Length: 300
Image (cartoon, rainbow, N blue to C red; front, side):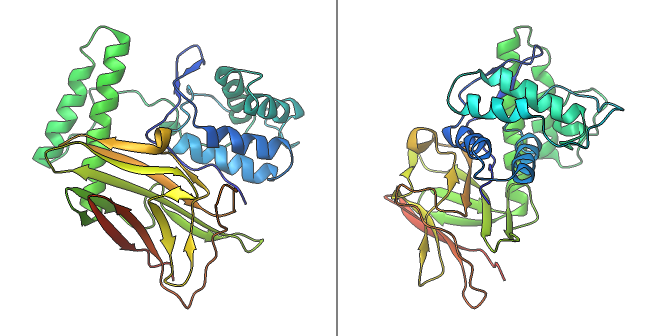
């Protein structure tokens, strides 16, 4: 199964008019094209869209489910739109209109919190003083009058809160001035499964923090040229999807960034099909000029 994985570095931001702006990662459109041409099934596509919305890659306005829900599957025009979107014939906003329609008729199930969450002054406050300070910074963003500046402020503050909570759940792995945090499975963006067809599907979300004094970069320009992979000591596996913008992630001193990688079907370009052997131990591996990491995944 080829499925869309989450992205933090490149999100789709949906305005109240349901138009989307910001860059759409190429691999997202590739998956839409796979569904349109029959490479993946309808259920796999719907699961992928649910995953995108839940993990804030696509943000949709709150959409009520109609009492006249459909049992007939995805309308043909939505599948056609996916193909048109993949080849650039229609806009991001037009494609998201189709997603909203599928939510409305009950084909896609997402929680209300996944649909454009609103800040309220009644939100519970944390007893953690550092986290409370971060939440206070988020509240201050609501005082900014200019919409674009306010959105940037909120995006930055939410990232800091997410990074803080992410680190609390994770074991740090040091590579020179850069620390990699992985919280394990059971957290958003991290999963491992074997599909009914026998394909192993591994999704990883990892936080990186630059504790050094100069800007560092993570490099991954394609499956064949990437400083990150998964290994079991005998075989090395290249990614099927990732969200390195323009092939790298830049981390300034004192800042954190998050990235996602997916290992599954071979997408070409020097890629590999991810295979699982319960007799072997698997590691997520990275090797940069500033240092190396090897994170045990404990897939068994």
